[in-house]
Image (cartoon, rainbow, N blue to C red; front, top):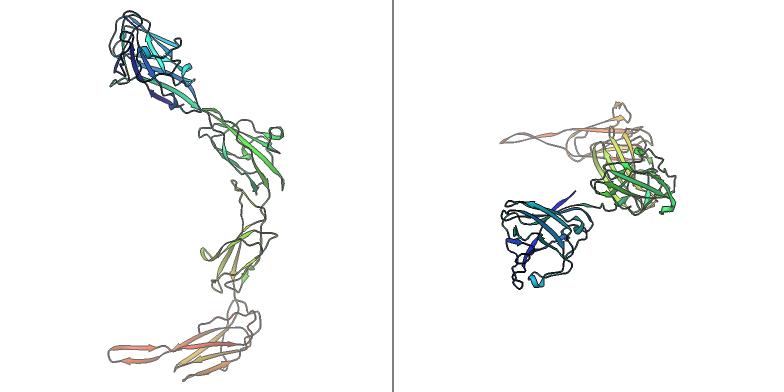
Amino acid sequence: MPTVNIPLTTYSIRQTNPNHKYGSPAENPLRAGGAGDLRMLARVPIDRIPEDATITSAVLQIATSEAATGTFTMRVHPNTESWKSSVNWDKKPARGASITTQAKTNPAKNIVYQLDVTAWAVTRSKLGLSLDISETAILKVRGSSAEVNKPYLLVTYTLVPDAPSNLTPDGGTVSDADPILAYEGDEDITQQNIQFSSAGTVGTITYDSGWLTTSDTRYDPATDPGANPVLTAGQTIYWRVKTNGPNGNSPWSGWAVYTFRALVLPVITNPPSTTDDGSPTLQWTIAQQTSWKAEFWNDSKLLDSVAWDEDSVTRTWTPNRSIKVPGGHGKFVLFVRDQYVPRVAADAAPVVSVVEKEFDTVLSGAGSAINTIAANINNEAYAVITARVLSASPTRLPLSGMEKLSRSGTATVTPSSGLLLHRSSRARPSRSPTTQPRFARSTHGLSVHGPLASSRLSGRP
């Protein structure tokens, strides 16, 4: 529980000189009767205690400034009217009966009187206190201007916990029939109480967990031995919570509400598990969607992506970059928000559907044959072009009809099936008087004529 020292501001008033303003001296004499009463008034800024706190203890600490002989009983009276800091005896406030006393015999210097004024402190009066003694001998005590052992009020209090707030899930659709509930509350909670209701009223409460031990502002249904509700599709439920801890019970929170709807998952229909396309089109089906985004991966490398698109119609996307064919391994990751909006987050209850499709690239010879392959050479060189059948285990074949070219020209061959072309060239050497021999690389062009259909042609033109 919090404890605070509240310093007092003290004023001396003396019947022996009723019109004199003594102010706030470091030493204050106290006496009852004799040559005249001597008292000390005290202002107590009790508003330093939080308004929502419960004061459990308030004790005045008043120290003597000199030793005294005899028994001295200090008394505390509550002031009952307002007064000014320019107070003197004649302008002193009215006071009530003594609320506490403490007696000490032969008090030494700096001995501390401890006077319990809890009953007065809980009233949070701003009128202050009046202190005196019941004896005719003088007892001197330290005032607020003293260098040491200044008077103060020692207050202990507790803060009533605030009602839990920011309950989740709340205000939308949840993808879990029995979600984990969370909220903000007192840091020192030791218990929580959860209630469910069909309509958000006390009269429609369907489940009360009672006090459950916890140190966390979460409610996991799996840890509740009771029969907490598990929703069916489309069902709506209200819930609220209160907590308990060192500072007592909190008030109930307001009601939160959510509806259960399982996530609607899209189904990826393309690409297949194997494909001869290094940049296939992503296709999917889903009954309804409100937005989507997608990613295209090659193993652990992100090749292309599209940001969230508020689009309920599109069901296809083709990435801009490709992976190698054959031997590539690709993956599409598709994110979709379904028609149940707004979806609200809860622990282990996602708001977005996420599906993945992995695929491998392979060579395929399916489709119409390539009719004509022409190799164009634009300078003097020797060109060799070979071919192999498109299959898992390519077979190298000679190109019948290909010519050896010594000048620019065109050689044409008509194969009977889909082909993978390779080219090599032998460069023409040239010399310089001051350098080693260098090679001038020939340039080539490769053109394909005829229907390609679904055949795949790769090469280095």
